[in-house]
Image (cartoon, rainbow, N blue to C red):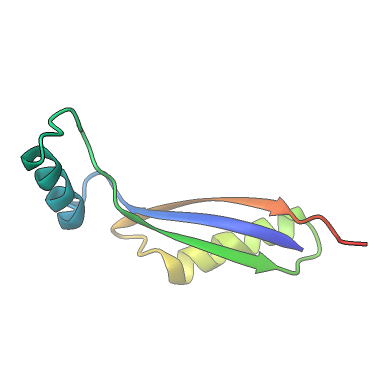
Amino acid sequence: MFKAKIYVNYKPSVLDPKAQVIQNTLRRLGDDNVQDVLVGKYFELTLAAADQAAAEAQVARICDEMLANVNTETFRYTVEELAVAQ
């Protein structure tokens, strides 16, 4: 069993209105030192895959086909093998 942790964010060239609202609000609250805000999506998947490479390939495909809009978003992920309870 493997656990995938997936992070999806807008590409740097895409305006993120939610992040802009958060940054503007922080400035109004006096947090002028916040230089940038990044808003994204986070997913966790538990996979029954044959090995690490198969799990990573499956996660990459899922991200590319469903979880991220590759025109406007980027994604990154980690895949860790889960300890088997005995």
